[in-house]
Amino acid sequence: MRIDIISVVPDLLNGPFSHSILKRAQDKGIATVNVISLRDYAVDKHKSVDDYAFGGGAGMVMKIEPIVACIEDLKSRTEYDEIIYMSPDGQLLDQPMANALSLKENLMILCGHYKGIDERVREHFITKEISIGSYVLSGGELAAAVVADAVIRLIPGVLNDETSALSDSFQDNLLAPPVYTRPAEFRGWKVPDVLLSGHDANIEKWRHEKALQRTKERRPDLLK
Ligand code: SAH
Image (cartoon, rainbow, N blue to C red; front, side, top):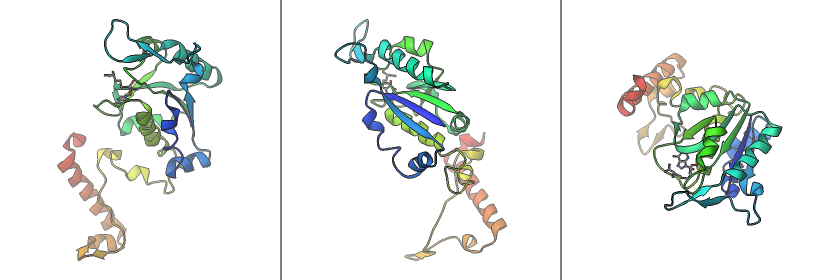
């Protein structure tokens, strides 16, 4: 999978992809994440990527020309399955959406800043708009990193234990059961006996019961 992220603050995206699972996915050649600086596509000599909003009001708007130049340049080299704009008014990211995106080959993600992007970009180029939650961030970069992380870890071969993504919360509409590791007893607090029993069927049954109980208590909406 290839994910190309367009940003006015590309440095914000240096960290998330250079460590741990996301780095390993790239080292293995399973996923490639490229961060493209929108400023490289600015058309005037001041390299400006934003301007005042028509109609007035506080806040700058990201200009259409650099964004279109950038999108068209990328499209001339790669065929994208989706051109995504990160936006608080987009479709809420959830596990089914991450699952669906993980099956794609090439994704482009445009990060907004300031008051957002000129609406004409959304009308004519964007194929999907994603929100990571009902709150407003200062830019789309952290949101794009969240999407890329949720998607890349699902690609087969990224996680060491192939089944581990399938047993996470939200797969099967259940939250994950509690987990424990050594020591089996700490300050008198014991790990549930069944997990030490070595009896796979009983362990599986216990985990399912706990997952169900936790979902009923915390997210009954998932069970509807
Ligand atoms: N004026 C806009 C918010 C702009 S915030 C509004 O009220 O809807 C600046 C940028 O941050 C947005 O263009 C978007 O790319 C990003 N952003 C902010 N909140 C987000 C969220 N919840 N999900 C995804 N992207 C978000």
